Figure 1 (cartoon, rainbow, N blue to C red):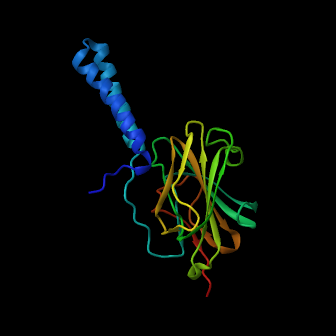
Figure 2 (cartoon, rainbow, N blue to C red):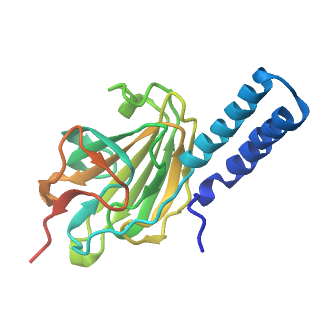
Figure 3 (cartoon, rainbow, N blue to C red):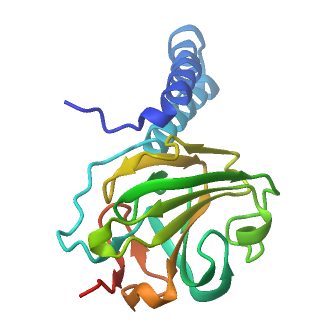
Length: 227
């Protein structure tokens, strides 16, 4: 049976277990008094928070191959047209998703495709809700080329670090084939994930600003497919 915790966080999980479990054991067995019990309870709560952050539930995407699914859990922060889109060579529709520290932070491929390009961009660590974070923060781009039956066009996903999130994991390289909804990385502790779709390939956007979405499950958009 698969543990519902992400493999991208095993180092942190082991570290937090050692620290917080050790602190709780010391507080409950060696120390005395109300303050010791409060500190012990705080250590247990902190451990549960960390385990909750690194959770990785199984998700099932709808069957229609034209549907673009969310690459992350969170709230749709903005939807808009970007005229000069990196990696796409033209205008795109961007859907930005804000992830709080209480959301699942594993990222998934929004469409099936082959990884054509990955690129790390150093930058600042503004709050992920700051409008400037999309262009100024540290980020990791992943460009997917969709299969021929969908049109063979590029889609790219951007993982963006935030005020607390300081580490982005992208575990795939160019040439890797990803199924729609397949895990490929995560952003650790509060962040933003964006999907860029070529304007001429979008039939409709299926979400609105403020909607809550789940990665690998909820639909962001419907694609136009060649006849």
